[in-house]
Length: 433
Image 1 (cartoon, rainbow, N blue to C red):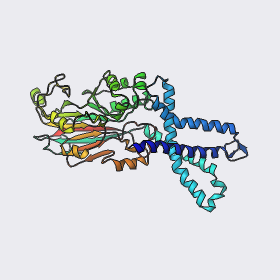
Image 2: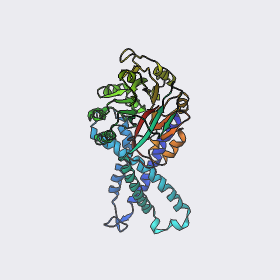
Image 3: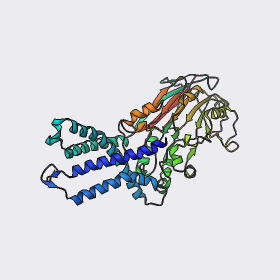
Image 4: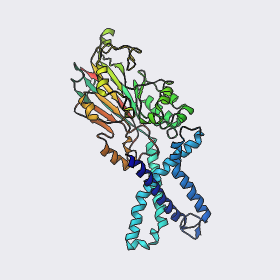
């Protein structure tokens, strides 16, 4: 992958040079007072200033990433991040439009001298079209979809001996889970968006909230400075808020992230397990309920810590153990409810990156929730992620496991959703006799 680190910056540089040259052509056309073609032409010094501003914008995202841990004013960092992110996508779509049009002008004689198809007019026409696409993509981004999924767990004698069906009628009150991933709190996802997300989650009245990695973007600095994590303390979830780390928690320095998360009501599961009782309507007494079926939430460490993270086989073996010590004697197992796990065991695996899903299925996991892919976030990268991942987004029933890969509640970088959606996933999980 070392070649990728060379080719990508080189491609970005070449793309910027191409768009900047085309911008110069666009600024060199004659305008009238209404900004349309006419007799007035911008002075050279004005064009140079505009070009310089755009050149800075082209570099600003990478500048913000490079100095993200330094003591820099929040609003300057936010300006660099947002400006650079928007420009990056604007440039990408401009190349997709301009390059084929420029080739057409070069090879089709009828277009070479056409007054309506000059280099400058093509540039401004493409700019207007891209701007409209980006506005639509931004509106789509700030209005996440709510995805509902009903799961009924059939009672069984063993962890790997049962069937799971969706859409069937429950004979008791289901456990309502709100699952989110890829919030990327920081200079892109700020306080106003986080508060909107909290309202969305609370509107679903979940019993429990699961955060499947990449809660923090590239640095804890803006998160800490603006108290973004504290906003999540307003989430109303009687059974708690649980989270696993993603690759961006490691990019943001995992130790710093863990310290900041520990100051909130969020419980970080890093190769650890929490037990949730699945109370049914037919439980006749407290003892029967205590020994009833349980849901084991298995939170996996991220693949960026692949040398230390436990295997799924190991975590499942721990989940099957009975009479696990409650809080303290076993640092890898949390018993948040005091239930000893003597009843039937059902499992939800939280794993940020959706790899090795066939293994998850073969090991008899009931449900897995992942994120990470964003489903490419924008067209045409959604087509690429669909090819790269065995499941890039959405729900799929494997031979045994039910797996959901979320496209993310928010996103990284450019604040646009084009061809994809941001989403909040709501699972209603129950047991049927």
